[in-house]
Image (cartoon, rainbow, N blue to C red; front, side):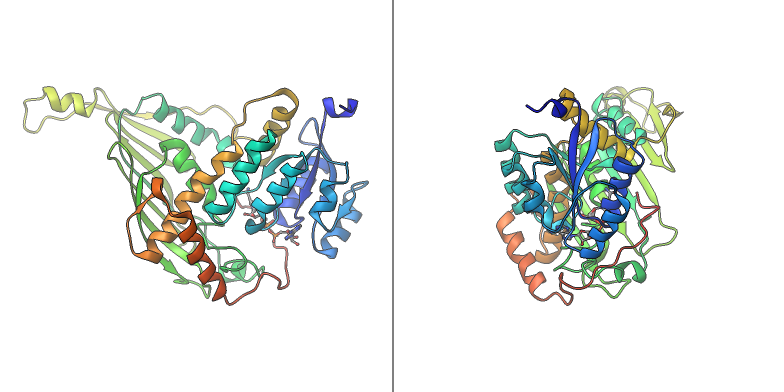
Length: 392
Ligand SMILES: NC(=O)c1ccc[n+]([C@@H]2O[C@H](COP(=O)([O-])OP(=O)(O)OC[C@H]3O[C@@H](n4cnc5c(N)ncnc54)[C@H](O)[C@@H]3O)[C@@H](O)[C@H]2O)c1
């Protein structure tokens, strides 16, 4: 192995749009990730490559990922191109012996993500997802409270995620946005991958799901902008997931109910309404027809800082390559949130209750192809970069 490869990772960034540029700045200009160097960049747009030549000193800009993969200038790749391209670009990267960090979502449909996961496993390379919200101490703590058993058996989880407001100007800001052909969905595939990942990361995967979805309810778009999904978990607990890009000011409130009380997450605080004894235990022993359990309202302390976000994931990815650090967001887990997302679409398209363990990946793919065939906007149209400051 070359000596320089032992103490640093040379990464290539694919896609110099809103997100890719931000990653390049953090790595190359702000030097926020120790051990990570920008070895090359890649974008199909000449205008984007020109920007790179002017702003990213000494970093070669490629117009084609395959050429960058074979350049010998990189050990790893960060894929920040539009969603459909994530799995094929990752599969090719693994074939070229590169480590891979994929932007969310893992892909648009589970069939292609299963292929990506198989290629990752075969390669033995480090494979991670840019699930930057997993670095948020709020969600880390909620997860700990569920996994440690502090909340007891799960009864219900309701997440209202209607604070992803996006106006028509946003949907019109890139030709691939908010179309079946360009993006493969609406808010489920664009804004919600973080939340759907956190939902399953905290609570586990639901077994069954039934959804009610509106397409173009608030905007002139062909994809969904309003979603309500009902879910069932293995232990019989139920879940409701509500999201929309059409509400202002919107809400972000996660409420989880268990035998030991309820946890409410809102405005970056966690409130644990803690039962003194388990409700199930109380029910077994109580003889008073209106007997209740003493309940304590606890504000759960979180410590300082808001988590390192994208930089935190890049640090973790780099340390996994250099020192074998455990990944916070392993790449193979990208399929979990996407499966929920696909199942929500599928339930609405087929008007059925969907069994996630027996999900028909092929049929979903076929139905998606029909949507793409009737899509009004084509992927090849002009691309425009918008300011994403303030995105989560
Ligand atoms: N983790 C997060 O918080 C977060 C936030 C925003 C976007 N994203 C994700 O990042 C990805 C990109 O989003 P964006 O907002 O930056 O999009 P964007 O449209 O601003 O940029 C995409 C760039 O990719 C280039 N491109 C397209 N196909 C390519 C290919 N095959 N090879 C090389 N370059 C290609 C385009 O020319 C464009 O410059 C999306 O998948 C999105 O979901 C993640």
